[in-house]
Length: 319
Image (cartoon, rainbow, N blue to C red):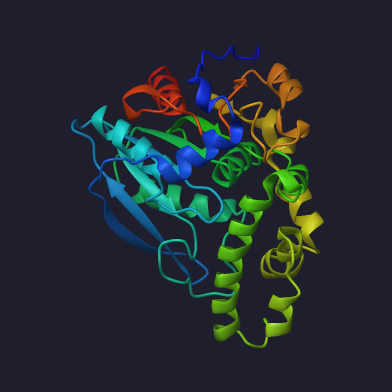
């Protein structure tokens, strides 16, 4: 499909990518939304916590939300989407990835950018236990990469899945990892590393034969974390092997449902390969919008409804 022209025009203050990112993540406040937690058991003996909220109309339509690295179903960008979709009559299932719901998961493994096996089980659970005729997927950052990989790595998806929107997607994981480790992103990288190492210490207590204190001390960068933990815990040779096999970029041309990617040009987490212009031009189901501004999941909007929240609603209503 042709590249989508963007109509995003933020205030002058938020035309700085870092300010947009920080405002959306730390300053923005979203009204509380009533959520009901459901725990589902996974086929490998682990669990996932799903936070459900319901629209005002029985439309038999569901949006499944997927958060980013070290996020959860209560982050402002998730709650903002929940709030808008519920008001417009959509039910919402906000997924907490393994270990992200406030309770450590049971196994040595956890979640990662390409863990589509968990999304498959969530979707199958919904299809088996609910009665939705239309299901939509929306993912942010890591969650966006995961949903695009899911859509493109298989010959067919359930007929109920009608469309998807992915925001601030690191389509090329290696390039994104390299960007995050640059000096411009030192504060973000430090925050991610702090949270990831806290979870690794929990793993060390539960699995002392697999994680030693010296291993934790040796992790200096996010690449070190992926080399030591993400790759070993999830069956990859090393961090580079993980990035190569799980990047959604290679799966985009096989996507068969309408899918919109919105990646801001000033997103400091994304390198040039994370803007799949060629893939979008060749794939009839892929739409790419590249606003000049927006930062990383930092799109502002009037009345506390972000630009991408409105875009996702319009895209889903059109499909």
